[in-house]
Length: 467
Ligand SMILES: [Zn+2]
Image 1: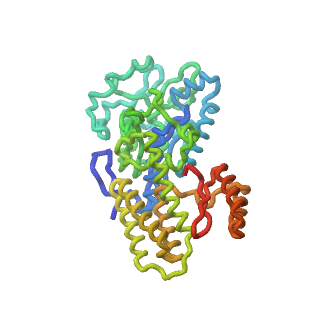
Image 2: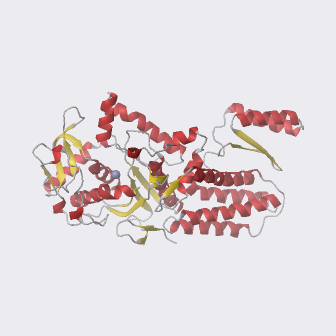
Image 3: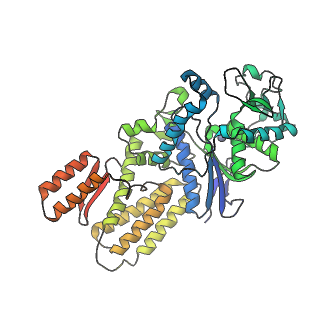
């Protein structure tokens, strides 16, 4: 089987073949760090993480780059209002973003370049575009991309270039553009705004040029996959593609992947409309990070995701089923011959799981294969019809599926505070000598600390409440 993706460029379902066999180079548009990211943003990052994990699961080596936009109009506006420089202003939100990634089980991309550290790369790209006649500089010093010089413009978003941007607000410094459609590569300096002294004058970069310069800096002029939310197709990705290909004369990205919106109460989640929820708010109300991850993951990426309390509750239950099943396998012991049909059962489950993902990341099919396996393993554990060695094999198979799902990680042996670990040991010791009063008291104390202890034929088992 081969991975197939629905490529936004052309719209077809295509077999995926990396330019460099065995090695996938991938870029994801990252956050603009002027506020904590909301869960609508995190749908895009959980999606990019899923693509990354599926590529690894499929045996590829992956180089993954995600930018951090640390200079733009909103950052300048809000840093100014706060009376601090943009570096100080954005540092808090960069830190918060990295923490959110970790909580949600999103792998840290290999490189997370910041716009302000790559001004030279952007200027070099703009100079090439100026030399080739694809860009022009206005009298006051801004540089614009000349869309009339690039007939392929509109190919990604499949739009008629003459219909675009007619309704867009024109900034005061954009009146001397040749055409209303042209977009800014470089913005001439304005009083009180951060700017850089460069070969093309003093100013700051436009947003689109940032992603072109940083993706090509780390991945080369042509690379395999570019991800982002559907709202970035136009104009951001259309502009990225035009300016990159106009500069290098080579195809920029082979496969463009875009996730649909996340909606709450029927409307798109966006900071501008105030219709937002943030991970930290949800955690504070008792939602576990793994349940949130599941809720963001479990809807196919090209379908709108309707986010609700009901969806979160269902996600929490699903995560608990998987975690409980694996914990039961981990604790299982039974002296008996290995079950003859178990290897085939595990192999079939893996095949169905992989086939779902290979079909344009059909997560519903992959999750259905996971829960079919969970159901079968649960019933065999309950009937004690498998051996200890079978249980180890089954747990390993579940963990392999979880390298894609990311719902078990950090749960097995992660930092349980020493005092709680000691309480668990004391409780096991109390049960061994049938001191039920002490064991019950310790169970209650542990529950207050968020650790749920259950007794099974294989001894006590614990998990964090709410996961
Ligand atoms: Zn971007």
